[in-house]
Image (cartoon, rainbow, N blue to C red; front, side, top):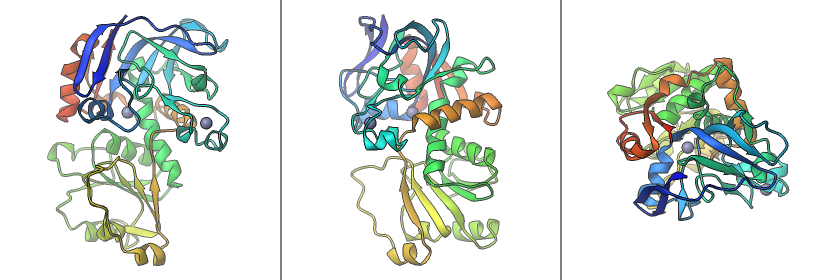
Length: 338
Ligand SMILES: [Zn+2]
Ligand SMILES: [Zn+2]
């Protein structure tokens, strides 16, 4: 079959590889749509903690069941795939934190992904209901955006976001905008901080420029309270005491975007954390349940992911799509021809 194989850093090649076998207890999926994630670009250019070479990338996958050895999915079903492949037995799995499974495989990272004609989905995914039937009113392209939306929903769950709260989001890239959409969908206010003039016209309660007086603006919008949840969807936002000062009492600061490991360690005013009862919270990827929830939100019409798909490419033209994502020319590019 045809696949995009990453052999080493910056060595991505469209080539013929052998078609995967349907795993015992798993399914074989014919890929219909796979979205390109900025993490794919990061893996191509710099590598990534969980990446193992050689690898077929692609973790935002929707397709059609071609073979089933799980006994759960009729051949021909359209399905969306959560990227986790886990044990289901460790403490993380039993607590529902299956994105933290200590025996975890991740499709598109250390297991082959969806930049190919076919994708093998092992039983360690199926046991967590990581295969979601796509409702008829959702296209496969739209379903391929389930995983990024699920990462936002997972982060909101980590932050115990409640209806009526204010979310302050740094960065209006795809993840920042999806966080804003899902916050509004939850009945929250969303304030987005974004420098690019092209990304000011988005679905948010307010869009601020990082050069604005953020403190005054945010206190005005929140009647002096500050933001209940602060989400850092870009590694460019400074994590410092000024950031903490934007949080409400009991505020939660979510490190959503991976940070550059070469960045200097940060010093924070610990007394601000103490007196204001703030929490620093990490979020990485998504659980199987947040993935299922995300697809339900798309199907319900609560989140319109169609507008995020600004480019489509064939697998042969993958580099065209990667360039567009890398240069921030489009929010999302989906591979829709294999
Ligand atoms: Zn992704
Ligand atoms: Zn586990």
